[in-house]
Image (cartoon, rainbow, N blue to C red; front, side, top):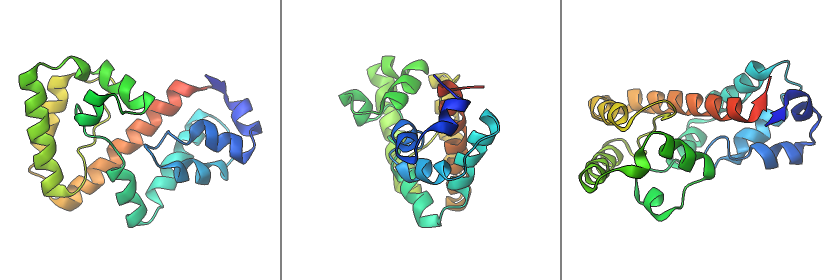
Length: 169
């Protein structure tokens, strides 16, 4: 944990080093948020990160979405997730799937990716594998634009969760 006072005192490089992974494999979000300091409070910091994503070009947003790993996917099985993603997926029980459940996630991931061109993104903190599977199946009937916006909204939740876990009030 780091205090907000310490966050505001960091150099731009230090800020980016600490927060580059808040938005999955997209350090440009932290780099842009660094320029919005000082933050009055934790909410202002979260808002800054989220604003950077919402104000990004559609190509940057798409790259951010595509940088996310599949939930319970091959990267998770191989141990190739960021520490945040690994902790979040483990918290949702995705590290203890049965073979049948893993196969179900794999099929849904493939179907979703094929349909929308992005991975299924869901802020799993506080969710169960059953919640995630239900959302997965419900969202497959969305339009591509709806899913793009839903995925970005889920990224906003992930950003909020991650910053809340790292920065004290």
